[in-house]
Length: 493
Image (tube, rainbow, N blue to C red; front, top):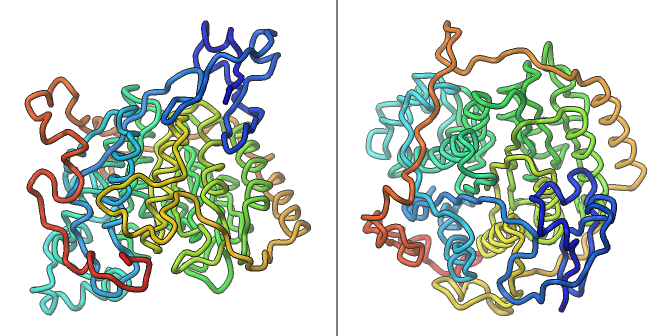
């Protein structure tokens, strides 16, 4: 199999050779890659120069990718029967390792963030509550449990605050890496908990790492774009930046009688933030063709009018076909097309996780999108690894979609798209300053601490080796036994 890319573009230039706004998609069998047009490739004819094998980088240039992972994230358990399972992040990492994708990235263990970093967005009393609450002392905090909306959807469990620290640290640390130009793309699949409010847990989310990462990016970037492809509206992030023109939030989500019930097309911001909240409300059965037909034009227009310095991309996997709580019908390739399109603009990207409640499908999605961010082709046959039996009976990466009806008609999608284009046409070219320091000050806080560099970690190589960090590597908390129980909701079969 031969891949055709411009000889001159790959030999003399960098990623700027790939058209930033409208790359041409070229398909060879099951392979899809971006190919520079003749005009964008210095008017040279494309030549066959690479014979593709597995795994192999398909892009003519390599962007620096950092990947945050801590094996302890998979040890936390929301409770029996709860759809949110942090164990999915450990399963994703296992596939990343056994597909050998870790060799194309710098693997980093996040440095725990301080309480003061969490309170750049969240209230002091809310964060202090998360720090002290445990299943053993819940009866002493009944008023606070109600006040902070901690209960059934957002339960108290062992190690709750440590869990929040872990996933938030990867997002803030990733933003810091982008700020310092230590990476071009950063991945934190444990993050993306986009529902949490300033003083309230919501939708399985306690600390809003998306907001905190954006605040970190605003220290170095005048404008930051937040894109959300979770099936649920990214209400917590939208609410946090609803009145500023330095952050644009764009959400493609199910709207109607569906959690959280927000995100109508008419909700487009307030004050300075008017026209900077973009919502595309969707109906049941959203399929690949319909999704691509709206995502690419809207995001293309957003990039043209808003021109962000950095992008935070929330890749919630509950918009996939067959999700336990979802009602869309996207395939892995349809979902990942959004990731590939965002990457094509050559803007620094922080890719986060989010929703996803069919346990065997979420790792499939995120390992595939890791390969897309790398520009690496991976086989459809899953490699044998620690959690191989979860993926039976086919043991394939890609999944068939269902035959559910797509209620998103072409006239409806076109109407919403034109409404959003009208809103985006009113976006101003500049934004006002937003401070990310403590309330009552005009100071921008210092940058978040960067994670340890490879040189500083040489003495800890054995612990850092991704192969030893699958499972309970590093001697951390043990896997919760309920995560390993066989049973219906997408768990081990």
